View 1 (cartoon, rainbow, N blue to C red):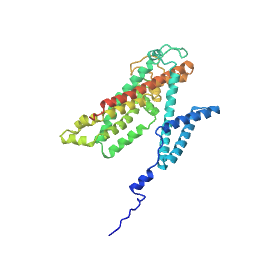
View 2 (cartoon, one colour; view 1 turned 120 degrees about the horizontal axis):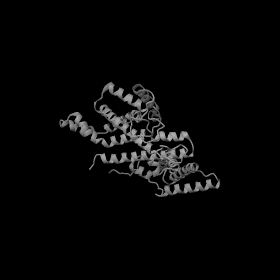
View 3 (spheres, rainbow, N blue to C red; view 1 turned 90 degrees about the vertical axis):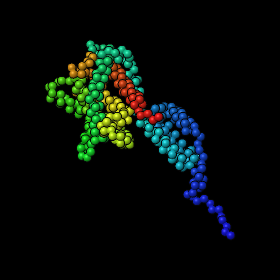
View 4 (tube, rainbow, N blue to C red; view 1 turned 60 degrees about the horizontal axis):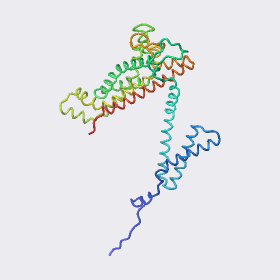
Length: 360
């Protein structure tokens, strides 16, 4: 007759692990209350020493919160949870640190631009307005921005999307590597180089001094093409290969599979990438100063006749002239440009949702 004895759970067994990990937990609202309390205490200490500042207050609050939350977690929840809370605090802190310049930029532009931003400012031009006069608006620059960016989009999008289709669906071997290499090189070229390229091209074709909106649109298209190619290429690669093979199995030609299956499936991503490319070039200044001109003051709808003002160049021109009135116009134009870019991002999100494949 054999006797059985009960052995204690091994250190690595499930029961042993459950015993080691069974620790307390901080209250659910404790981190939020601790953060608010740390902010109030740090603000009081800084105010007492007459050295209160938003930057110092934010940094000291983050340090105090991190030290206290980690110490409390070590005593109550154990080392594993304390490490998790430490990493979480660092990640949130880095996110807020990255957002700080953006928030500061938006606040500064809005604070300084709202003084002159009005319906009048958006609906009149600078035609007949002297730099020192408290009048004039940015309507001619808005017209130029939309016209130049629209023409650049019409040139860059077909080239970029078709290049991406070729790289994903057709290109192989050394030619694919060469095209990819040059697209990467074009992605990193400075914008002023695109402007100089178009100036040289325009001088060869039409002679020196021929600046107009079409030249500016070509310089922006040169900058847009690699961005569109890269974003479109990534979106086309996300289309499952099973969809292509199912179409081929039904006897559908490759070109028709691309048109009817691949492009509609990736339409949302393609649209978003195109809108982001537009938002990337709409604020370029250097190439447009060289190609579209910087002295236009009246409304010009003709891209091929005369100089055409746009928002980035208008901002540059007003700051260059100096003076309180010109500075106000420049800040208001900067606010207008920021709102246009934000509107483009909003449209990209809406269009992306509309064209996204239905999952139900």
